[in-house]
Length: 288
Length: 288
Image (cartoon, rainbow over all chains, first blue to last red):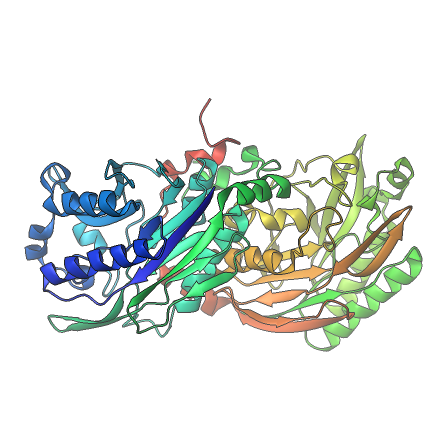
């Protein structure tokens, strides 16, 4: 089966209606250009509010059952026959999660994935807002292939990609919000890409990352997101990417049948030795 | 602590004495140029005999206790004050392994690591010769840092690098023999580099790979090893590499103290969630 997947990136403001409008237009344009799966960036409904710790932002969260936002994108998915993994701030009981509603190309909500790995640190204060996800990794059986997805920080962990590949994913998606590091003297863009290119190469699977772009100011803080959304082939080579400033999208086609053959021929799943991997099951690499 | 590490690559023939001589000269030259750790390629004592399945090659194996080969390189290590992870074909009881004797800079043999992941397939018939290693991954506490090592095929598995990093490795080494794929229409060189660059980036650790170079003919079979030995920084960027044909070496310096800080600051070990990684402990990703 051949599929076309789109990586996208947009600037976001506190004009929420406009953010939603832009995202919808982006999806529709990608669909018109043949995309079967459109990956929008992380938490695009609002600016990246985790830049600072402020209780008022908890009001932005929404419950799956009553979310008009999810419903609207279910309609867009159905009308344009595209898969849309929809990143949103989820309220569930007394807990708050950084979640994705996985919308199939017929508009069905296939389920919710809650971000497993939650970062914290200057400008990325996510542990203040989100509980670590309790759903576990999920592979969604869509009209256009079995799709695995991690949310932003999840992308830094080889375990995310490996678990999803072992669970049968044929393509990996990573909605993202990453940019400046105000107190670390580093530009992480290449580092960020290299980790995910490694996931692609090690698991012989295409990887798509959509990142936020633009500068956002919140209270006395400012962040510039570095875009650089990209698509990697199953050998870890970047076959298309956007720059650090533009809004836009790019589309690549993959033949999942051919890639599944390549994954089988290469033998890296045949030769795994789980009995030797105990260190991975412990934070400090040691059985207590 | 600052260390200098050398990646090397050589052509090999059935003139075993000459192979050993070349390897010793390479180590000595690297040491003269400041290297503290010299990584030689996989099984450099002989041509890559696994190109075909032939019982006579089992005679090449040697026991650790009586190996003159290991002893010789212990002397070279001591005389030149360099760490030498020495790849060799090991006989142990009735079993045969693809092993490394880890020789410290004072000539001490710190221990044996036996290759965990064993490939098979046209020209890489290792399952015919070697049992899958039974030592588990090992980190060696050398005079020049805590060194983790995987042997060739091990390098394709994110689990190898992750386990070694969790066990405290500060640098990862991969002696290798890889080249042509006679029946697969692929050149795996970039793919091979991208997987290891991913290990470096995800674990925030330098990675060094030394690969064989040259064409070797055995019976009716022929292989060309693609060299391309390289050193990656902890962000997954290649900071030095050799080409596909030359014999030679390259040396890079790393400040392990600074890298350890970077690893701590970035938080990717702090935020791991082993309770979510069960799929990794099963071949098919599922608990039976």
